[in-house]
Image (cartoon, rainbow, N blue to C red; front, side):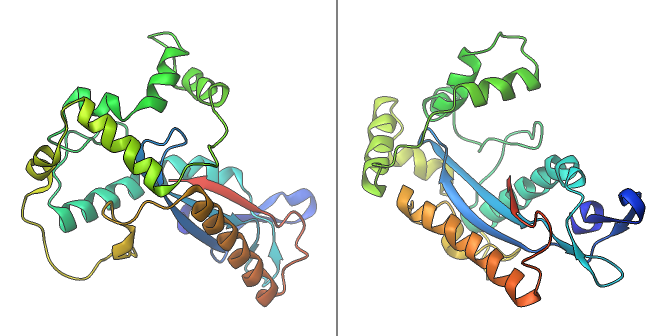
Length: 237
């Protein structure tokens, strides 16, 4: 992203595009979708500022970031698959649009834990475009349940798994393969795997606030608090 999408502008009216010297960013991990389904993903907060070749800090040309966000997401997913294979012995079905399901889960298992997808599909026609489904995703988006706890999320998932016959033995058959050894790579800490604890909604809000604090602290250290529109933008991977 820094090579391809880190740009700022110079000259009269911002006509000249120049490459920025990297992003100021902070990331935090989520393990659930808005509907409470298992969904490991990362939010990245990017400060709207970069240093140009002349040493001045100015705001990013943000359209370039959004133009490359999808490709960045594909790379993120590939890295995540690699780590899950290395650590847990996971194997994968065919990759489609950058995403692959774990081998060993049948369609009923996936549907039972994809309630958010079911809501979006129910709100669109069978031949709906990707854009139409994006609109449906926003239209059907519910407020987060602030009363959910780690234990209530786990109990909900256990009950749903039992209802479809997805027990511990089925999980062992899926994840019981040999895995590689060695220290975590690609910047993913051991606690960030699917085996880590499921944070409560309060914990994820705290993680987001800590990410914002890290961005603001870095901006102060670099003396760029006053860059015009230097707020953080958020990208989900």
